[in-house]
Image 1 (spheres, rainbow over the protein chains, first blue to last red):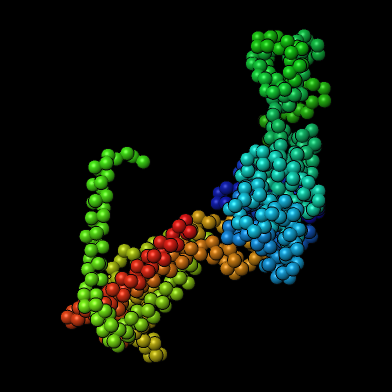
Image 2 (cartoon, chains in turn orange, cyan; image 1 turned 180 degrees about the vertical axis):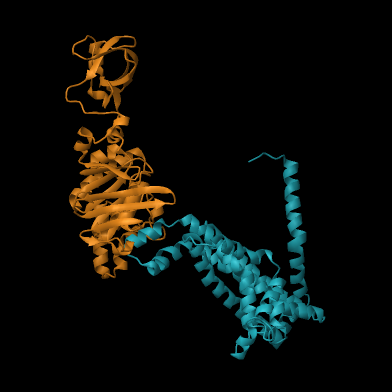
Length: 326
Length: 268
């Protein structure tokens, strides 16, 4: 295990940011810390980096107890949400910073900076100031700067949070490809479940200062540990007293399956290729069903129509809120 | 912008320029005119007077020491105020503003009470060990430091706050220790604010009068600074020398303002 966190507790005044968190992050993988804002995921990342001191618990990086080590001795690369570029230095100087601190020979620094700028596609900008770069370029520069010192682990705190949607998606794919090239153990914080599912090998879901579940994107999606993970990873609806995904609801215009709930279509909304249908069952449940446009047309679904809904076979279901309080 | 009718606009401009003209421009211009009333005679005679030269040198020495000390402490205190939490922080912040509101004469008197050689708190013991503070350069430097204390701090604190500590944290995570982080990251990012504060302190230090008058003893040829000399010469009916020295002080102030004006746009 590359990073071992055990029993970390961190309070800011009365607010408990992390409550006895223990988690192990494997070597060479891309791990996402996923959770809602204020859930403690950024604090956990900063505790690992040594930018924040935990009130209790231990942090071990690559087998070395780092709990008492200051940030500059942990050899971790850190990328900040708002880039934290050195404004008065050129792009090349920014990337060279960590190497200059380590008093590497000039020729070696120049070669390494060159290599890294090529890796992040910023070679032609090496003599510019950060203020002359776009947000995406700045973040790539910050990444090169963090990678320059050959860190044992790379930590990214909401790295794409301040970028617009299109650049964000590009950088996300790029980070995945970069990681496949560089293979450094990487942990990134995000509140965007799509980002986490797309990029990460493993996801740690953090909420209210606690770890809710650890697993691969598929595990999390198919076998959520509780209603929180279930609803955080995607849209959910309630049918027959259980939570399930709207696309896992089987809908028909005739009573085909035993136990199907009968109801009336209350609302039909078409978004692109999919149709979102609100069904008000006779038991008083408001069920959201998502199906393709062709399927909806074939069933003749329109407001006021009588339909029968039931969980599709193999649907992921989770008992609702009350049952899953941990 | 609120639209203002043309006559009102002209009236406002007239009032503003008129106010500044009668309060600042005209009186200062008169000093310059008086200096050159007999050609360059006043200025040349001034430089021939060893007491004047002594006063100018002393002013420069005191001002330079005060600026150096205030810059070192100013930057340190600013970093302390912005980056660290400690009990008494608000009190310290309030105390730093005190020199702006308290009269320099009071400052002089206060220093006199603590450091004078006969019955001050520290004065006698310091004097026994060969350090004379009051009626000597150290006392004058202290008085000037006190008066110019807030200028560097009030420039640096907002800049330091605005810059934030992201860059410093990034430097730390890249392996820089506290000293390297300060010299390579913090100082370059507050550079213009520091320079601006230094220029303001220099202007203020050169012009200090009240506090220095009390702690210096105002002895001609030994502990008399330029501003004190202007007063003394004027009262001795040597107006020519007084005007010429004033002219030199004005010149330095204008030079400071020009430097500030040149720095301001870059700083923002």
